[in-house]
Amino acid sequence: MSLPFPILAAEEAAEMIQNGQSIGFSGFTAAGAAKAVPFALAQKARREHAAGRPFKVGVMTGASTGKSLDGALAEAEAISFRTPYQGNALLRKQINSGQVKFFDMHLSSVAQSVRYGALGKVHWAVVEACDITAGGGVVLSTSVGNSNTYMRLADKIIIELNARHPTSLLGMHDIFEPKDPPTRQEIPIFSASDRVGSPICIVDPKKIAGVVLTDLADESAGFDEATALTDRIGQNVADFLAAEMKLGRIPREFLPLQSGVGNIANAVLAALGQSRDIPAFEMYTEVLQDSVVPLLENGRCKFASTCSLTLSPEAMRKVTENLDYYKSRIIMRPQEITNNPEIVRRLGIVSMNTAIEVDLGGNVNSTHVMGKTMMNGIGGSGDFTRNAYLSIFSCPSTAKGGMISAIVPVASHMDHSEHSVQIIVTEQGVADLRGKDPHERALLIIEKCAHPDYKEQLRDYLKLVGPGSHEPMSLSLGFAMHRQFLRHGDMRQINWDEYR
Image (cartoon, rainbow, N blue to C red; front, side, top):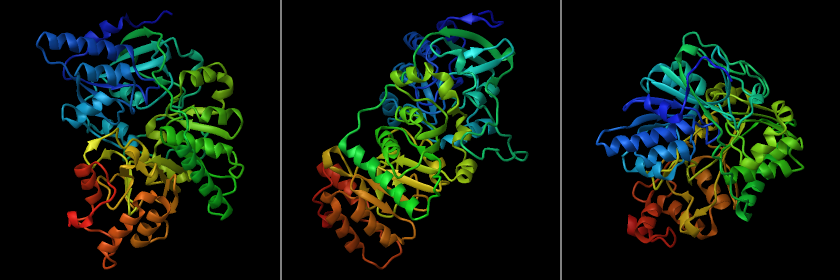
């Protein structure tokens, strides 16, 4: 390939990046994440630290990434700040210790915040592509994330040209960036399959500082096998949606689905695909996981709009070996579009996300363990939940071998309020919170979703609070179950008098 850009080794590209600069990386999950340059940057950081010189960079991405980006930079202690979402164990530890500043953001708002200048200057964009033209046309690989915005705003761009992804991915992307107020217009997407943008990112070729040639697979590991518990949660969601259709509250042609990331999300989609009562459906979501591939093959999923292909190596091979088939059924967009509240509301999306804990008021904590320890971030769950036709949160009813209840009197951290959360699902059952006052919601959540080991003590909490207030809230007892776990290692068999 003959290109008018310097062909660089990853180490040469890393040398151009300086301490204190901010980088917009490609990647939404490990799919399409830059790999060679961040890994080389981590090696540079180690050398600088060994020489007694500081070296840290600000890291902006689409969402979580892979071991060669978040993992390598965290191990080299080379990250000054990180946004908007992460999933690396060491980076999580550094965030919770205060070593790395973390800005937890709704994924739909990141590109806009960067454009508005709220996150400071973007010195570099480091983006993985499967093809590039001499005129600055960039064909992204297996995700979009915020890559188009980072490249447009960055002072300089480094392209990782990855031969592992075929150039025939051209046509699977739909790149669209809205204007900023006061000239912003509607985003003209009226069905999941509508195209509104360009199949390529077009950048100023003068900003491309170099191209790094790679041949590296995405670092997506896939997910665990389904369990009896995740299967029950998935079936509960499918049964609920089928019942809503019979009641006429979901149209007969069904509605587009959004699904979060993880084993429970995979189980829910599998159950929906197997349900004879659910018609073939479309997806308007942020991540496509392995469970969607067979649904696209057998026609249970008619079309999928997404931000990334977060697939195991086996599933990715299946897609790339039959690209003509999948290019007519999958489209990848920037997260600013996949998660856009305007489109979520217009299409009537059914959102399905996971929770860490749910309280008796219907508030959901999806980010912090015991109220203070960050897990990964809010991701896109808030983008969809607040604007969905139906907002569903699911989780196992207990954690840590039953020592923690996911149903608690008061959530230790609140990401999604009772005003946005409509349906709670555990392996125990389904609580439909619509049209219920706070006391009715509390009783319903206990009855339908709490584990039997915790039902009675949660009912005792309601008795202690009494009926004399709009919300069943006790400032002294609201976090007693959390305090019980911190003191005794188990939320069960609580003595409420101990916490008055």
